[in-house]
Image (tube, rainbow, N blue to C red; front, side):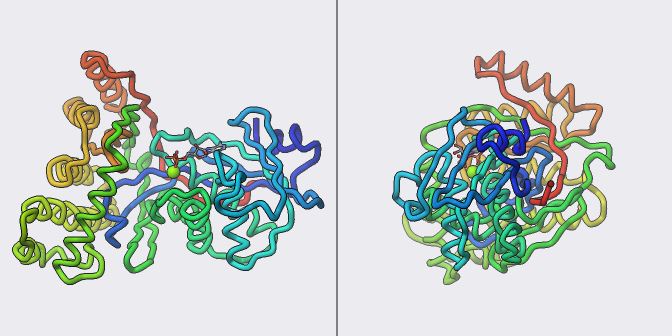
Length: 385
Ligand code: ADP
Ligand code: MG
């Protein structure tokens, strides 16, 4: 089904238009976002579509092709954080309505039909895809004229303050502002973005996303601890955000950390500052059209996340190691850690061998069968029809 067909089936009318926004993968720059650091995500071909149309009533109605046949109806005045409408999946599209209203946009009651090919919870940011599709749809429909970075901020505001998920801005920025065949170099501290050529197919390469389907319960608690470690280290080093420590000043900064947890803090700081440097090196290689040379940087990122930041787990390590042994140019865990996905950069002709080796290793280890997807750098949010 498309969003248009879903809209017609559930609301009995044609939509005013259809907009879409993609999922994303972060090539490199992990656990740097909340320190004001550097990230390098790219949008993928899988997209969420939003078909919308004004309904002339006082009620917003939302439906999703992936969430049964239900139509959720909510009165305009009930769209506020903490209200029953802010629960479950409808909170994502309705949160965007709320965030736009919070920006002073008078959003008339709408019907919204979603249809997404971005799998939820696979580390591909299905949430940002939904938010950005809805944000662009309403903004375009009303002629609000928000630029892509502003739409990304509106989508993040919805997720942070309506849905209640304390995410950074990377996912929404990648989904809203990416362009086909490029990665998006996002300097979070500076608030700047730049499109960097990243055409894997033209280079004879493939990017695989290996969803280990592992989810260890420590993830949330450890994430909060890492953020706290970074804030504490930044305070000791006299910077507002940890990523303000320059790579050239790393050794000096490590020497300034003291107290009973100094050894741990040094590892955390070393990860963040070297990871920012790996993002810069990756950008330089991509600019020089040397995509294959990025492989070792991915592997170095994984080692740093595993050893210094201590957010990996047995399944992630097995996927990354096995991919490399089977001929991948590099591989690393992505996302918060303690489960989730690994990305592997491989030549097109080794992709099949990498996938089957990982499957075999997981089967022998007695782990659930991973889901392996091939992704290509695709366009950001757009008007479809
Ligand atoms: P992800 O890593 O995929 O972004 P999240 O937990 O952040 O995982 O977001 C997933 C949530 O986004 C889902 O639980 C659901 O509430 C919402 N969502 C994603 N895709 C859809 C869809 N097709 N229809 C309705 N809601 C969706
Ligand atoms: Mg998400």
